Length: 309
Ligand code: CP
Ligand code: NVA
Image (cartoon, rainbow, N blue to C red; front, side, top):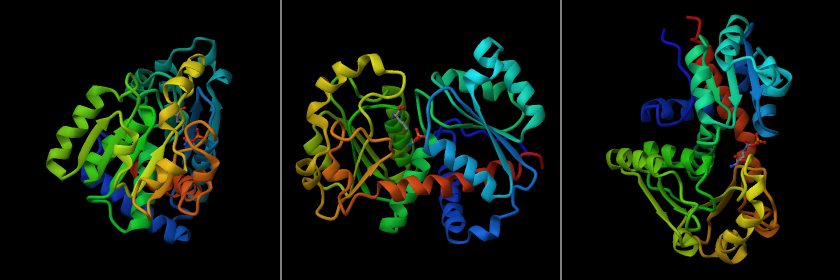
């Protein structure tokens, strides 16, 4: 069977994404069914950047499936001393059954995948965060019972999380509105790709610069940090540029009266979201964080169970 990577959501078909969501429902409902599913399998977790949820959910997820995970901070590998990504990929492929990597530059992930003979999973790059979006759409479906036609407003930076949400929305028939300050819109090619797929699935992807217009009628209001990892030197400028895009109680109240609040976390409370909204009874941020575990177990079952078949 052909080896599969998960570098972005674009490369999944709508049917493959649907299968992942369906399997996540089953894995969450019946975890004991999969306790031995990945016995003897090892997953390497490479981190060029910090992580709480991705690291812990992948590591615990592998153990819950009967396998094992190795956390490998990039600086502690020879990679940090100049060994090439190509050689690292080839060597790790001789030891482990899959590699998850969190990298700065998406192109490094592509190089890694090209030279690995085992599946490579994107655990976040500067371009996209597919594991997050799979979890997010699972979380919305779990709450609302469906995804087609669900109105999601993403308010904030047109970043990796926004790109992944757009790609997922296009495949799932979601109506996604992204509102960013001028100059912080998502990558036009990611949006164009999502919009062209949306035309075939009934999804709608729009980008604007008006947070109130974006949240009007929304069933889900979503935000992410204004300063992503690697952009720390831009923080002061971003605090100024994003000030009108904070999800506070007033903006949240402009959505539907039963709207849910989501955030991939970590949150910078007081910046992109106030504590009043993050801790609101309709905030589902911790359910969302929990679901990283279930959705990634589904992903690992899908990629690793068949990788050596
Ligand atoms: N949401 C997310 O990926 O969190 P971490 O950076 O903690 O992994
Ligand atoms: N956009 C954020 C997401 C963190 C999970 C970042 O890249 O830092």
